[in-house]
Every structure is written in C-alpha cells, then in structure tokens.
Image (cartoon, rainbow, N blue to C red):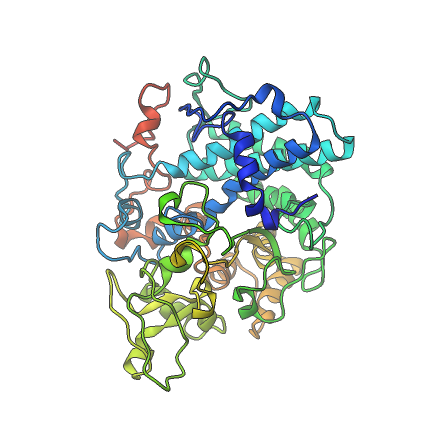
Length: 503
C-alpha cells in the first residue's frame, strides 16, 4: 500500500484512471484518451489509484491561486485580499469587498469540489465488483464516502443551494441534476460519514499512509457538520470521541503540540495535533503551464502571502524571506486584537515594525498594512531549487482540522460546564494563558486567536450570525453574502437556478 503522503508519484496513474470517468464538474464532459471505466476498476491496485484521485481535490485548501484559505481569509474581518492591485484576482478582490457576481466568482470553487464528488461516485459504484479483500474494499468505500461528504460540506457552506449527485453521470444525464434543500445535502453528508466511520482504521501507518482518513478524521468532520446544523448535542458527543481527555493524548494518538509555533514548521508534517491535513510537495515540478489545474503539487498560499520586494540589509537579524505577492495582509483589527496574545508572532509577521527599525524593507502593495500571515510565510530555505517554477513548489502542508479546533468546537457545542471549561483551558494553557470563564464570547475569541489565517473565520462569523456586524465596513449584505453566487456557466443550459439576490 503506497502512501497518500507521496501521492505525487502516483498522481499520473490516478488521473489516467479517472480521466474519462470524471469531468471538471458534473455539468461538462471532457473525454480524454481511450479510458474505459467499465473495465479499469477491476482490482485493488487500480482502485487504489482511483482513490488517490478522490483524495486529490483536498489540495483546494491551499493549492492554486483560487485556494480556499486565501479566499475565505479575504472575506473575513481579519484579512484583506491584498495583492498587486484592486484587479489582482477578480474573485478574491470581489469577495473581500462582498461584491461577488455569477461572473466574478471563480468557477473552480464549484468545479473542483464536484470533481471530487464525481470521482468518489465512480469509485463507490465500481468497488463492489473489483477483485480485492473485503477489508480493503470496506476501507476504500469508507474513504470515498467520507471524502464525498467533505466535498459536499464545503459545497453546501459555499453555495447552499446545490444538486445532490450520488451516481456517475453520463452524456444523457449530465444536465438532469436539480438543486435540493440544504437539509437534504446535510442528511446525505451525515449518512456518508456515519457509514464511513466503522470502515476506517483507528490509526494509519505514519510511514506509508500519512494523509489517509482514520476514524477520528471522519468523526471530526461529522462533529463540525453537526455544529453547522446547530445539532449541538450530537456535535458534542462525536467530538468528545475525537478529543478524549482535554490536554491528554486521544484514542487516535492526537495531542496538542507543546509549542504553538511548531505547528508552522514546514518539516513538521502530519504531527500529533493534525487531524485532517493537506499534503503538498516541492518535488512535483509544478509550473505555470498547468498551475491550478489539479496537476500542481505545491502550496500556492505560501507565495501568495509573502511581501513584495522583500530585502534586508547586511547584518540584519530579520528573517530571510523570499519575495511574494502580498495577498491576505492582516487588518489593523486583527493586529489590535492579537498584539498581546502569545500566538501573535507565530501568526502575524510585523514587517511594518521591522521596516521602521531599518531591519528589512519591502514594496507596499494593495491594501498594505505591513502585517503578513506568518503561519504560511515561507523562508528562503523552503524555496525549491529543482525543476518547475520556484514560486509554485513550496512544500508546507496545511491543516483543514486540528485538535485545538475540535476542542473549541466541542466547548462551543457544550456551551458551559466543567468539560467545556477544561477544553477551553487546554487550548489557552498550551500558550501560557490563564483560565477564563467558559462562555460563547470567550470561545469565539479563542477561535479567532488560535485559528487566525487558517480559513475558518468567515464561516464562523456566518454560523454565529455575526457576519453582518463584523463585516459592516466591507459591504456585507445580510441575506445575500453569507453564500457565494453560483457561477454563470453552471446555469447555462442546466436546470440550476441562481442563489437569491445574485445576478
């Protein structure tokens, strides 16, 4: 069994396996080669290659220019879009100002997730007839269902009114899907995860399987799903299975790292705190010709958040950074909220202060504040020196869910009591902060401090009903901007209808 961690080696195989079976999204067909889906999925090796293809869209988190973290950060109150100008990335700029339209929304936020759904549907449909051991079949099926659930969870949060497709589509059925109520999508997400959990292992082999789902991964996703549905009792129960005793090692081997800043060390991949992590590599030789097309393996967020024209004089003790593109600059509001927090330096790179002290210089870009996202800011030692474009071959992994996140979600679901207090205290104690009484306000603040810049803030604000107040200075319209408009090309010739108040 090969490892998902090293999936770039096998990615070509996975794409070959899926090229004819999966389109860029479910409303377009783009046949490639002579792939025959009726015969390919015949054994364990072929199905494993296909499974890698189902995992691959997870890289949407921080891969490509249109990655989720950069986009969602830009629409929150903690970061601006930034970049070179007001037109540098039309989608991210418009979301930062909450002025998206069906034309300006990048269609990849729809396409890439439905590509994952399509790949999962194909694999699930083919697994029963494939030659393999029943335990392997059960595990592959569980992984495909859990991944399908995760992609639908992103889709329903991003677009709300979406079609539910559970079987492979063909040229006769490709235009048939219609939107269903969000509750129907959530019910299917729950069903997939509940069916997946028993078929997943408690742990995976760190040397050969890092990045694959275990029971704790699927339970963490399910707990988050329940929380977004406001099913707090269910959320608390399943998250307790993930979290175990606050501050101790859980049943899956997860534990808070002792040092918060260690979370952002590039080489510290798949560490004890990681529950769902996206793998990136500098060995994929990613280049401009196929950047953002699902074939690039680098972490694009790294170069995006770097300051433009960074330099430092001889003898300076400022960090040695490569230049970047100045996206996701932190707002003054976040700086002021975090400046006395122990997590500040690991989260925000205060280049404004370094420049004032003569220790470093840079070229101020659009919406510049001088505050950069240090969690994903690469160092010169991270720059790829081999094939491909150096800017596109950063290797830092990114977290989708980590243990501190699940601690705070369970505390929120519980609301009060000794366990909620212990969960909140554990997150604070890790960075040397004293206990504070557990309240929703305290949990909200802790999520902001702990998870800043990781792409959670916008959805948190929407879930809490706080988005209109927090984003009042960014053009946010309540009842509209909680979700994205559906891309125009998805409406053309289909049965889909645009989301309310969008053109």
